[in-house]
Image (cartoon, rainbow, N blue to C red; front, side, top):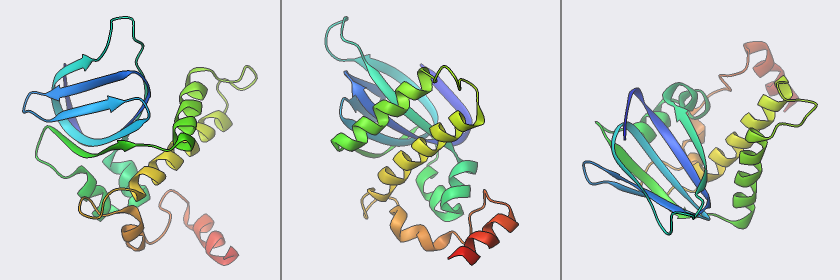
Length: 178
């Protein structure tokens, strides 16, 4: 498979069931195991997807992909650039087991994305709930990145001056409420 993008993406893949991997043409290998998260960035990914186990084994994953604009809005330009920095191909940032609570959260988010409540299939509240759940998973995983790799979220928090997704009046009201 080949995926070439105009700008890099950050990808968090939560293994919900089964095992698979992606072997990039340049040699980088990504593993996607049940109960783990694989965090990577890529701009041009050409390689082969492989599935472990028997043909009957079901593989289920939740994949969150964030572009530079969204990462910059939430994390600031410096950290977004650091997470997405590379010339081409795939860059593995982390691959580690997740807690039972994180796995349950990822499963719930995947289920909500596929099975909207009958009374609210296309309401703005549904989109907000999905977005909030995805951001909670993103925050938890980025703050756990090793100090030797990309700057952990906690160390970069001071780089973001104000919530850029809020209008100036809303940001001012939030500051006053503190």
